Length: 484
Image (cartoon, rainbow, N blue to C red; front, side, top):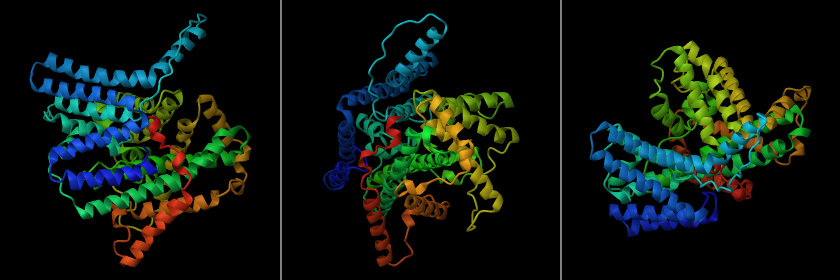
């Protein structure tokens, strides 16, 4: 069930009413309702994979209880590796089995000793990369004694399967989300209204920005052999805003929906395209995943508390694993490697923690130097997105080769793509709104707060009309991160 579907528009009010009026002030009933609603929400894709979530939930719940009952280090390690093995085992089979098999067969063919083996027609469970990492955070934190294990299976099941962020994040830490299932939740009108505003903003990002960008990006990438260099560059540009609008739009809807039920999820995007270097970009892009890798992979490897070359090794490990997490294709690994290379200058110069403050904080416009830094960072990021979007490495190389040809200096024929000029106007207005809200985590909640009621509601109605007029064909375009 997608957030931008009629099904969800019917599902959400029903769950909301049951949650606040039927299960009112009964914490266990509310948690049970969340579990049931989440099962229905996920089952709308494929009910067979509910057994997969249930098995992971049972394993990690049991591992948590087991860790609470022993202090012996070898038993604790055994329990931890049981959780990691089960979760990564499922992820590896469903997501990477055919990738490893195909590469294994290709290697033997190159060596002159071809062998035969059949790949499997495996359906990738929606959101498996997200809920796998989320439930692993629980067992790792319990193992590290940073979190007390729970004995409430219903609350734990609600944490694992919480439907707003089940299939595409944010990847919540158990230490942040799980305790919220044990606190009494009282309806907060302001919080709910803020949530509705964030849902509206997320739908605008998804249906107006991302889905319209997808049409042009797909057309250009699918016909890259006959496109000019300038049009190929526009294709990469459109994809950069497609993936940002799509993924951050999903996160906004997830966060807004959670606020309707009294929960606070972590912020997943913080105006990443205004970053001044790649280090800053990765502090602002898919924050829940980048911090997960930082805390559970990078820091255990030694993080930045080691010599320079081990630091370089750790950076490459993190970005290559991040690339591979996104999919079983060499394009994702190259994308990760490119970002690791981009990161190195900041690491060598010691400036990877330089831009902790928001760009142009307290000022209307950035300085010329800041503008150039943002433009350069966006350009490098967009170049890397080509490999992320391409069908395979060969396609990416030919696409890049087409950009760096003499036809790059021709004027792209945007008028041949009906509506593309209008879309560029929307992207420009979108960037203005993002720029104005870059200093406030909940800026969208305050949109129009200082205006009169008539102007404020006119603005909300305007957003709804724009979404319906310019995003009315987007129900067929799934969220990009469903494939991960």
